[in-house]
Image (cartoon, rainbow, N blue to C red; front, side, top):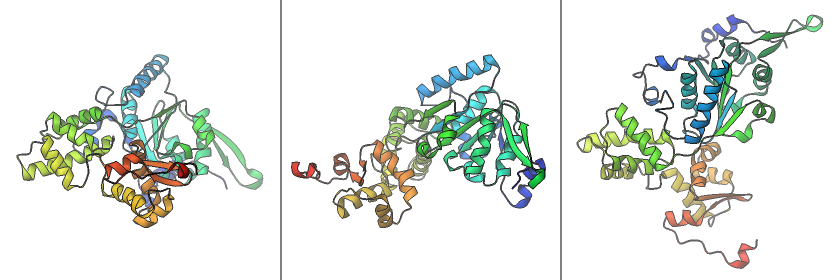
Length: 359
């Protein structure tokens, strides 16, 4: 089957009932009143909190690229959701002074989707693809020469008249983001010049994020109140920003509107988010393993079926923090609750005899 890149194909996608897949975001022109996410997103390294080592590395890389007057190398960011991968891509675009086109791998279903967005790029622009591990094989193979040599390899005609064309592309930077770096194919991963893992935030960093968000949204909060929310935010800025809105609502309705430590704790208790940041689903998962499966090990499919949850939800949303916090263990035979998990839920630590420990 021949693949022909045609501008009209790309422009007509909206008329065919598909959503716009490649919005251009000019960081300096974002309307802060449009929505909550845009309102609180940092626009520069000075306002981007956390990931200090990564920021220092990127600053040097960006300065070097500017001196050479060349686009950045392709970047891959991976790590749990909510740590700021998309925001960081926007900051990089702002620091480089270029536009950024944002899309996601599931939106690039057909060859002409990826071809259209590549042909619409201008020199130096950034293409951000979220959940890049979900790219289909055809789209991935189209990206290989585009990333490496800045060419699109296409064919025209049929049977005896088939011709291979190499269409040049302007030099651009691809930033990929994924929560599952292990699912990226080797050839795609190797084409990224810079690969970084985003780490969970400390309580101190999250308190800074919460204080900054509160200032933008005109929410009154004291230092202890910010730390109280930070401690229950699972090391994730997205969760922290979501919780501050819920706590703010509670403080406004039940009190004067100012968030203090006691008000924050009271409202989060009502939301059933405990002092470790675990919600009802997290506790149900741990309780199930302890009460029904003697603490594990038990397979993730069994846990998902028993809880009525999707396996991917447990793997992508619940497990990363439970593993990071040391409450859950992943073994070849399945998931186990750690001694810390027992203690946190108020269970007596599971006793393991020396004979059992040999098996």
